[in-house]
Length: 437
Image 1 (cartoon, rainbow, N blue to C red):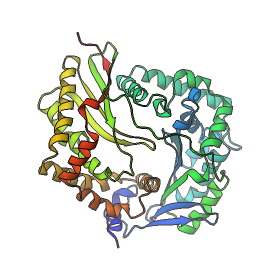
Image 2 (image 1 turned 90 degrees about the vertical axis):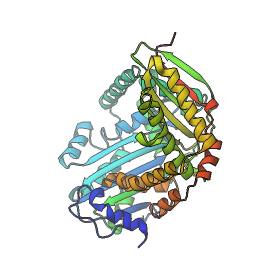
Image 3 (image 1 turned 45 degrees about the horizontal axis):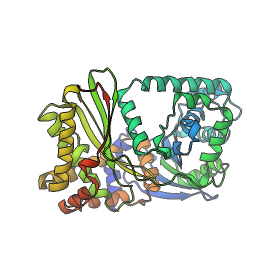
Image 4 (image 1 turned 120 degrees about the horizontal axis):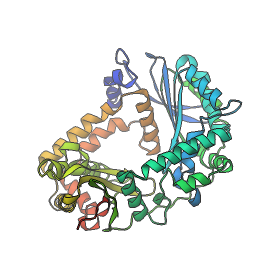
């Protein structure tokens, strides 16, 4: 049995929604339906629960430029009435059977989530099918969801963190779909019509863009039948994806959005790498050391703990489908903001020029390998991992291989990747707060 199975078995008591005892063994299986639809399955019959995660490549980045927010609004409406059932009837059937069904959209993907007790399995999959293939978009539901989204956008317009992040993406991806917020703008959301929602379903939901992960109380023959029944009615293919690759721009730009608030918050970042880059694992360890490791990271230690300059400071790798980012954030007293930014730049420079210490490297690798299994704490979390493994083309044995990939990272690897990615002069920063005198 490969180490992948041992990892799953070790944490199975946590993974499968509070099982009373760990599963004896867990295997990732590829299931192909009679109709040719593929899903990855982790079987467990010790709890009568099934979780399914679904992802379609292509999300809000495919929204028309004047209808930003369309994919997100479409996702919010798929479970608001479908087939013969209006919103109230559809939701009542879900509630009566304790079925969890929802959809959401990000820049690069459109996702569906289903969780059900085994006894309601067939009805749950049938409702999932209706939501995907026969959404109603009745006017009362459309206007109610539109109102909720607009209210959320109005709240976001007062959020310094959201303002900084939106302005940062607009700057570094100017002229590209990534510059637009997936949730859209108030005017664009108000302009969306039922015809736009129906067109979005046709544009986004097709079998050739689909990835499925399933965890729980179901066997391959049953799953194969349900895959065809649930997804066989979707179009076989969609129009080719039209979002181009882009290298983030606006390197070195510093911008302040003035607001009369008690602190200054900022989004900052650099061009990064995509998930399939050979340097991904070295960059992962590097980011943990710089700002991704919480209280173990250099930025938290130097900016917050030693000097008390910031309330929070962090960095993270963001591997979008068409660009890679190293993204970060900081929140601090306005009077100490410039000092905080100078120290962030200095820590970026030091890691680039000097690399990590042996202790930092060892601690980062221990944490990254030790904490990863603990993230798999539910049927849903495992199903999401199954989808991500397929999306990233990592193979079902990736969890078996991952510890060795992290452990193999050396100081020279991090120095090489830091020289490639960490340039303090290229740091792009957008802050929100009072301008300093």
